[in-house]
Length: 120
Image (cartoon, rainbow, N blue to C red; front, side):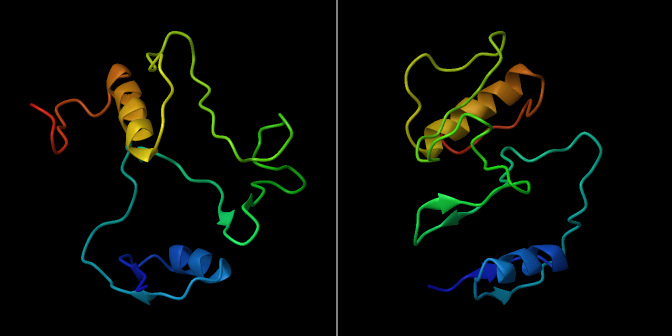
């Protein structure tokens, strides 16, 4: 499989190399700096070892399970009670994206942004 990093960021390349990925770099003419008030839809703070299905700790001696213990094989979302979240079980990345996007909209972000398949 061909893996392309479409970024000029030395840090992104360093992280991918440290994780053992082979990739080519395609430098794009985009300003990659974070702007005030801007944040990604989802933050990723760990990685999965495909050989063991274990995730890396995000701090020394602390796993990414948040102190609950046990294996990190079941996802969970901890959401404040005053923030809307689906009552039914969220299954799959697409459904989680919609749930998180709706939270951002509820909080006043992503206003006026429509996605493919959505009506404006």
